Image (cartoon, rainbow, N blue to C red):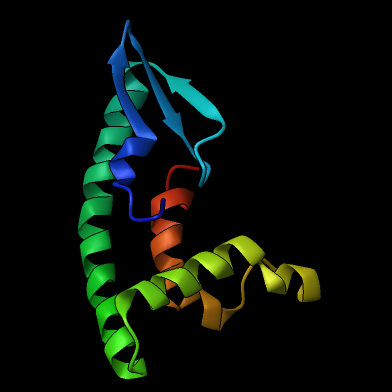
Length: 114
């Protein structure tokens, strides 16, 4: 579920290996050693700060649109998953979509791991 703690995409070190995921549904595991784990932990810390800023943007957009936060997040997920611009214009997302805080949330959560 999207409200899941994004830190669950990065596992703990077990026998010198960390398992982590780069995909939304956590279907395809990747592995790294201690050095990669340290980098991923640093990334997670930075992302916590960025996601806090993003949450404020999502709240502001929801208030401006007269909707709730979950609707803004759902729109971002839909945009991330459907990639309508890719079907029509051979680009992943357009500038308006990139500036949407719901899509930015998905981007921070997943693309940063990729």
